[in-house]
Length: 130
Image 1 (tube, rainbow, N blue to C red):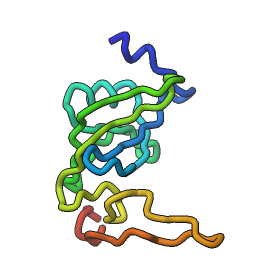
Image 2 (cartoon, helix red, strand yellow):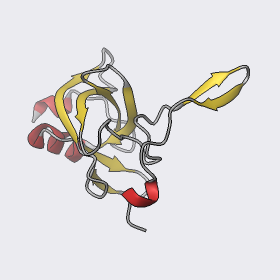
Image 3 (tube, rainbow, N blue to C red):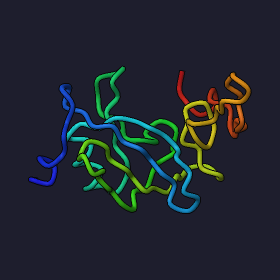
Image 4 (cartoon, rainbow, N blue to C red):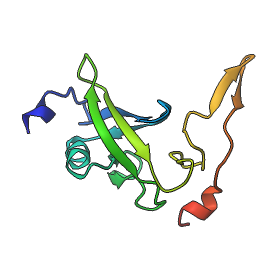
């Protein structure tokens, strides 16, 4: 898989990944992938990330059911950032954030402070196992 060799992996063998919703163009989340995660993502057509906190592969939606169907995989001009074009499944509208929101980018800088600008669509306590 020489296409994986063209990526500039960081010193931990990871590359940053942005997940963008195909229909709306919304940036839903940022995560990390290692070689195996990116290879599995390309093979499955569903997003598989690397969890730095748990030190293991994380198939998006494995616990929540909020799976990301991958339509396209792009690499930036420096070969060090991956962009996934996805459809977020499992809830309508799609929930990508562990806080139960559509996007992880739900805070906006307004007048020198962070303001929450997106509602919780589903209580995270009902999404994830304790």
